[in-house]
Length: 278
View 1 (cartoon, rainbow, N blue to C red):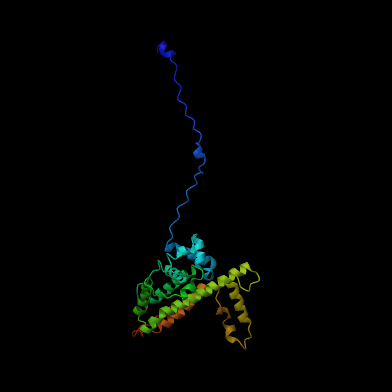
View 2: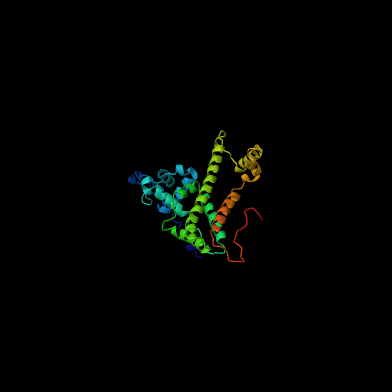
């Protein structure tokens, strides 16, 4: 390095220019707010999902278009672009229950097992939402979306060999049994909920407790006037809803089986085991 280079001052790095003060017209501008989140477009599917939410919280008596709109955060009028009315909405909810519901393939050797599986699955579908059994009772599955399910069940009955008149009535009979059974279950759940919120209610919070009380009561009745109630006190009321459902279903299936043609000589008619027995 030469002496001349050593005497040359090292330039300092350029300083960052200071930000200028806001101009007078900028001072008058309001602060930019945050952009509102994009709202998911309303659709028929979202309306139905919201209706199920309201149904589970409020029950069928509390389900209204106004409450569904409030659940979605929209005006009531916005719903009518996707559903025509509350009745239309209830039908859509009923149809939604069949989504993913498997249709049985007719098998004459297993028809009772197939119908039993179908009935238990449908019961669970109805139990998945409060008051759904009431909605089911008010709707028939003869829409374009549901006719394939009706056809599949009729195929099971007819392939098994049931006479046409019996096959035509069997589906409605089983459906009515399931709806009524689940409706009763729901009523007891509602009574239990009221008991929890109102200690003065006559509702019982536990069906098992109620069943035990009824059994004890039947057993205490005078034998001369009520010999059969006393004799059956231990089995008159079951503490298991599943067991009660299966026994009722078996009674129906055995009744249907009695309409089958007589078996060929040397064979025995199918009777099936009694529920609850080994």
